[in-house]
Length: 134
Image (cartoon, rainbow, N blue to C red; front, side, top):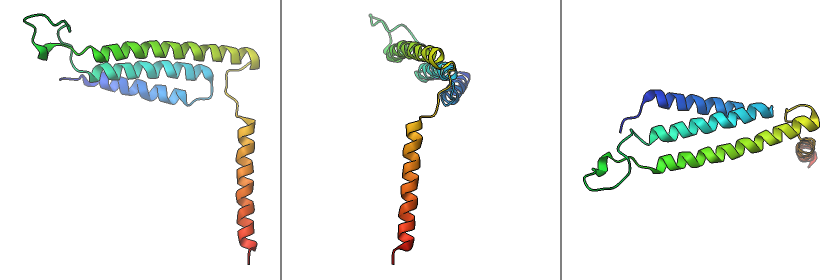
């Protein structure tokens, strides 16, 4: 099995760029990151499956060692459909957020901040009680 180094490098770069874009705060960048990451993973999966061989049709006279495994191609097609559905969902969410708030940037959750501050205050109270305890 021979794997092209350029395909692996391209898949790695696409996965890295997609991962970085997913961590951004703007929904448009998250959308682009999901698409790029999906393409990178598909490319990685297909390049890891090995070199192309004969069609997977089993008829007399075909060597089984030269037949291509159709499973990675089927998984890649399934991943393409899932990426398309995820892209449609993220696009609808970004559009709705843009229409409602006027920006596509994800805001911090105020309740999450309150919970974090409450936990920090409780930790400080516990530390003060330990200091004052005889």
